Image 1 (cartoon, one colour):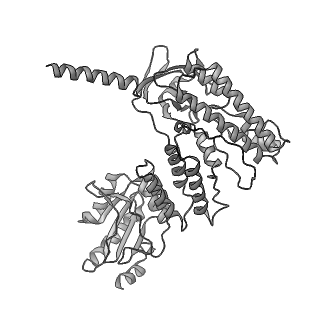
Image 2 (cartoon, rainbow, N blue to C red):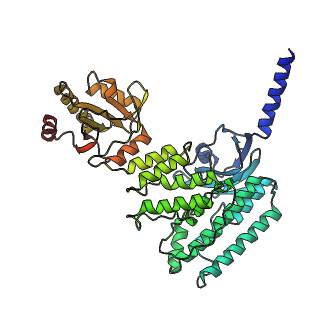
Image 3 (cartoon, rainbow, N blue to C red):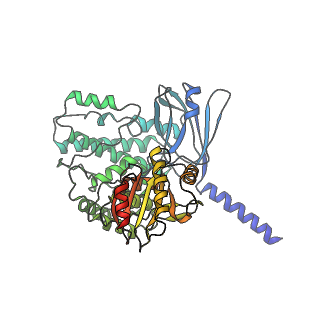
Amino acid sequence: MKFLIAFKVISTVVFFASYSFGQVKPAILKIRFDKPDLQASSIRIENGKAPARRIVLDSTTTRTDSAGIVIYTFAIRKSGVKNIAFFQDSTMVTSIDFFLRPGEKINCIEKGSKFIFEGEDNAAKVNRFLREIGILSKDSLRQKPLMRKVADDLYANFMRDMADEKWHLYQTTQDTTDTTQNIFVKAALEAQQYQRVQFFVQTKDWTDDMFERIKDIIVGRQQRIFIPNNETTYRPPFRIVPHEDAILSWDYLFSLTSHLGGNINYFNQKNNLSEKVAEFYDAVDRELSRLPQTREALLSTILRSNWFNDSGSQGLLERFERDFPNSKHLKEVHYANWSMQKAKAGASIPPIPLLKSDSTQTTLVIPKGSPTLVLIWNTWEDSCQLALSAVALLAKKYDKSTVRFLTVCARNRFESWKEVLMCHWSNPQKDAHFYADYPETSVLEGFFTKKRPKLVFLDKEGKYVEEFSPFETAKIEKWLKK
């Protein structure tokens, strides 16, 4: 009995400790929409600028009170930028960023696709501040430089002074008890001054009309990425923030990537992209040796960008696998690499995960010993269904030969694939028919072409030989008789 009581006490303490220090606390966002009937039904709340993709926040509940205020309650583990998207009208979607700490409450009014934050608590004050200085709003100095005819280093020093002034203003006017919030603001200001100088250097020859066109393009949210010009010789000064949470600012992550040489322009560097990426990899290891999460974020962003495919790309992939064997981005890096390995004589089909007709997962590995015909198809085109029937007849005609027949259905609903297969291929063998889900389809479309249906010929070693239309009967028959 004493043991049971002690266990309950310890469990209760652990529960409340994990809630208080642990890292999952409810946060509340209250919004009075200008057009609640239109907007409330379409809203979504997401984690902000994640390097890979946005992730919808978990455990979100929504209700509307009697005053028409929409109330969102959700759990967050750490402070950071969140994003909210809603319909401005029946066709225009507006997206707005805001900063939130665990356990906070935000009250705001949406008017004219802008948020007005009410109150004097930290949530309201810091969000107003970040908008006023251009961190979570349009940055006017990235639409037109403050000065035009000055030296690069003079403009850079001026932007540095402005960033330092804003940092001092933040420290003296805002609640700085949250370390993650402080790091985010510091990193975002560093990125802001860097991008302002970068924009100034690259727009020296612009006319006023060109700056006006930028203002016309930026509708509803800040222009986040300005592609660096490799011909620019001036490198803006940049201070690396020595903390992993700095990359919570997507602008900082992008600027740090550019600063370390990750501003690789595919069109200007076609012949030595792997060499350039390797130089960037070395710089990341050298400058960020004590920041493993930051290193992984920068490198995975470059490696899954589908920018390069030459003799050195495989070595870079293997290096990333060794350095980050448990990376959550490893699958995406693999898929990006595979999708760039275009089919050519002697190439192996990437070992992508596929589903069997019984819903179990397997890996597409072509067994050796016999030549193989692989039909890649989808269900919504009549030509693909005709191809399925045609190849099924071939398989029946050559059932005594050593040739194997496989099919891979791509980019379809799983159940519709099985239904169509049964209609056009009687008594299909379970180990000969596979389904590629949407992420895997992108690999197949990169390795082969997007055109479907496609009949692929593989030799006895499982290597790519060539591909035909499944309706080129004479060529197929000739190949089968060899």
